Structure formats: C-alpha cells, structure tokens
Image 1 (cartoon, rainbow, N blue to C red):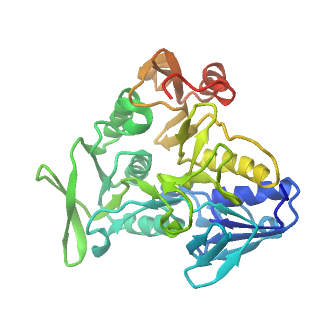
Image 2: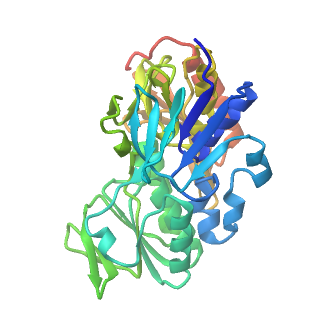
Length: 397
C-alpha cells in the first residue's frame, strides 16, 4: 500500500481531531484537511450537559486544544463547511457551499444527528443538546425558567435533569423506558439511578410515551403524554437519542445502515475509513458489529484508523467503555452491560452509594460497572474482559 499524500477528515470534533493528531504522531507529513460543519474549534461534548450547562465552565474551557496546538498540526481547518456529498470512488467531498475537496484518503467522522419530536421546531423554548451553541442557548433559558421537562431517559436526558435540578429548577423527566439508562445498564442499576433522581426531587414519568408538545403564542407550555397527562413547562429538552450523521452519504457508493458499515480495520471502502459515533465496524474479538457513542471510543478508534491509513493492518478490538456523572454519582461501565444480563454485586453496597457489579449472560461475563468505585471497576475489567481484545467470538455473538 502506498501511503496517501493528502488526507481529508470530514468532521472536526473529538474523533476527527484525534485522527489528525495520531496521523502526525505516526509521521504523516502530507497535506491534512479537517472539514467541520461548525464554526467552533474542536471542543469536548461530555461537559456540555454538565459543567458548561451549569455555568461552572466558561465555553472556552471545553475546547480540546489551544490555538497554538492546533496550529502545530500544520493542518487546514475548513470550519463552517458542512459536507453535502461524497464520491467514494474518487475520494471527493462536496460541501454545502459547493466547494469540492479531493484527497487520496477520506476519514468520515461526522458523528450524530439528534432525533426530534414532531412540532419541536415550531415552538420557542424547546431545546436539543448536541453542540456548544445548544448548551449555551439552553443555559441562558434555564437561568430564567422555573419548570423544565426533559424528554428522554438515556444518559443525556438524565445528566441534563441532574444539572438542572442542581441549578434549582423544578424538573420532570419523561421517557418510555421503565428505568433510567435501562438500555445502557439494565433495570437493576437503572432503578438505583432513578431512586437517586427522585431523592433529589426530580419527578419521573417513565414507561409512557410522549404524545406531543403543548404551546401558546409560539412558546412551549408543556409536554403531553399518551395517558392524557400534561406536564407543564417553561422549557423543554428533547433527548430521545440520535442517528448517525450519514444523510450526506446518499449515493456515495458506501454501505450505510446504522452508521457507516466498515470492516475490522474500520475501512468502509478503498481509501475511505470511518471513526467515532458514525462508524459501525466488525469487532474481531466479539464476532459482531458494533457502533459506540462515547468519547473514549472516538479517541481509541482514531489511533487505529490513523495507523491503518499509513499502512498498518490493525483490527479495532476495544473493550467498550462509557461513564456518566450525575449529582455525586460517577458510573463507569466496561464491556456490554445489556439489559438481558444477570447482574451481581461484587464489591461494596448499593445502600452505601459505592459498589461494583458484574453482568453475565449464559455464564459469560459481558460487562462490569462501578458506582463511585472507579479503581475497582478497572480491576474488574482487567480480570473479566481483558481477553475480549484477543479471544475468539463470544458464544452469543
């Protein structure tokens, strides 16, 4: 394989920036371009629902690198230029403004697009939270609001509810799941987290669908549930999940489903790779396809993509990991702690607010979790999941 002389990275957030930095560390001296839809320099997303929303951080603190560090990459940052189309065979990207960028290799790092509720765009006071501008707009509204309704019981919705409650707002969280984070951590841990929220004063309306939004004079006034109940609100946040940012890839020649379909090397086509939230790749150790939406994956996958772009032949076989901070609780989960697993407490005591848990399916450990026990969770990962990176496929894969 002849190393590329020009590499174009579509997406200038954590995954795209990490890929660029890894390329330079691996000795790539060619032309490097990062195409970003936002005008902001690369910034970190996890603090948006916590420190930035709470006002504990100034927006600039969320930036991933200083201006001097970005300049040191010797890369072109084409910001405020959303990608509109890709010709994978020609490795050419057309932007929304009509600009055409060509390269020897293209890395797709376009992340996620939030799902929206019908009627969401027609009412003032309804927010999503994906980018920095979203976080700043929501914070400005919450400082003047009294009642917030969060729609969505996943990580993002729960974090926003926790932050808003700490800001003193009256908070209601609605979602179709029976617990918080049920899809990510299962019902046992999800129920424990739900109790944490109710103990802090958050009202939960779980297990019921949201029928729509109520409004008057162009502003949101509440959220209607399928039961007929109206949850009054001065502000509403919609956090009902996201879709991979692949709309611009229609007609590209790539296979696109739940993300950009890639092989074990994160390669979508000759000279085209995907990284981060948008990539769905074959995990060689598990014998199944994965797409992970978390900050750690964005950084780790970028290292493998960069190496493979320059001639390596490395499979990407991580132990999946995510964390969330809510109130005084830090949850860290390694592996795939699915709702179908049997959960056992291995250390500590949930009543004391510190414990670890192991998830098992068909006798195999599939995930480990720490609740305010980070060190113990890492040790459990090494003991129970380290072989994922080299082992043959799991029996259930």
